Length: 186
Image (cartoon, rainbow, N blue to C red; front, side):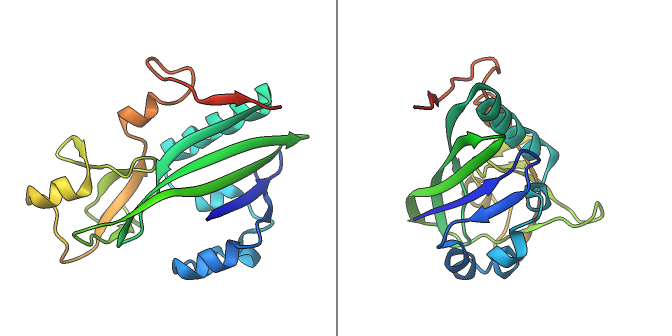
């Protein structure tokens, strides 16, 4: 399954692929159907300054160098670990096509429910927007590792703020140790 959106030079969503609404409904994303997203800034839907910076870097790389960019990431649902790839393609005039494709989905256990921390008073953990690792006590690890270590529970939602962990930061082009997976546009 692949979902695509197109953004203009100011990162406003100008169109989405035909299967967009069906995917949104299957994932309880009624606020993400085409009628709710087309015409709005992409940044209305991206949480966390580090995540925004990570995406802006990839978009700028693609626009300025006219490169296609592929980046793996995870976008889990409560019951699945979903390994995905984002493909960014410059179209011209600053417009980008951004496609997301599920490479593999595996059942996730235990079922851990995450929710956004809406205010600073809520206890929260940092969660990486790219690999879905969770930071607890200064350590980035799979949420299930923290569960088995007794540091988180499945009894109630875990409130998170989204970030980009140090490992995923090194995967950006131009960062030390980061390897790029860009391909020249043909």
